[in-house]
Length: 186
Image 1 (cartoon, one colour):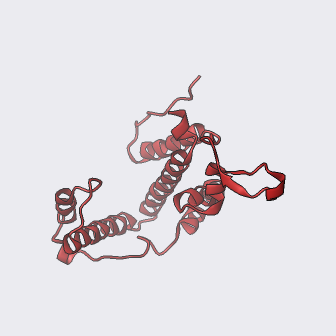
Image 2 (image 1 turned 90 degrees about the vertical axis):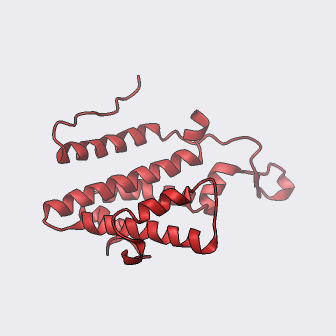
């Protein structure tokens, strides 16, 4: 609903969409240049699944969030996890900022990344904006206290629609005649 989109979940979702779009654009960019970035991207992801699988097996971890059997299947899908390299860094030698610069999306990075990262990492700026208010007792010198109500932040739905349409336009480049787009609500 409106409360979820206009709160923390909307900002975290926008961050995920932005990073996914930029990654997709970078992969297409590198493929066009003759590089094999898709292989590195996939191998990194398989390594991450393998690492998750190992941790859950070795530590006996269990949660309703993770289907251990399915993760094990995915981690072993291409080859046994014992033969999958695990990279604990980024899947590419570039960080997201450098990737954005390389594919001409630095402005997008500046608009969304730092702000939404605060919400992903639970930093003070995000906590202050979304869950704190100033105490109105003048003797308390306007210190911050938890909000008494849900703070509705500016709704990110239109920004999310624009990002999704940029990603769909990239899919159209890779798979011509993919014309689906999300229309603006009246």
